[in-house]
Image (cartoon, rainbow, N blue to C red; front, top):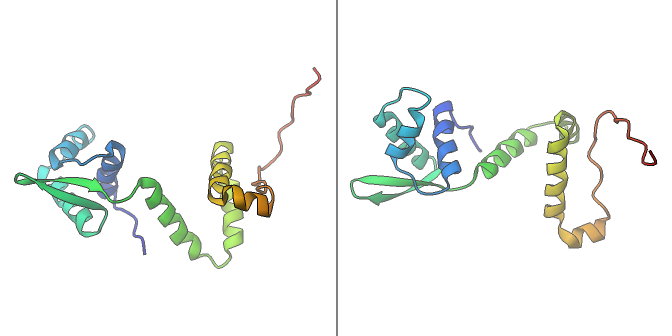
Length: 145
């Protein structure tokens, strides 16, 4: 079961994911202090909690630690979506509703993701990827003009 990160945990993990390298408490603290007043010990406690929960690994460096993400933000988001989707009593309807909320850019990203997951062998065996619902059609410009 994937539990959503708390607000401060998410703020810390956002930096760890964005920087994509081992980070110190001091680095995270200094970046967070641009947005809010926060103590070193608070950031240290949050990173320790994230380590205990399995979100980050740490390696000793002198008297401190460097923390690094165990997985990506994309994997975290996917796990949350899967967890919520699996609780639906009508998964197909939940997906249709979800697709209906998507912007055109999100639907295109979904099409690309489905093609990657299917791979060339599956695409050839199962035929083309089916269209994702687009919502109301927009009038197309006449190509002959």
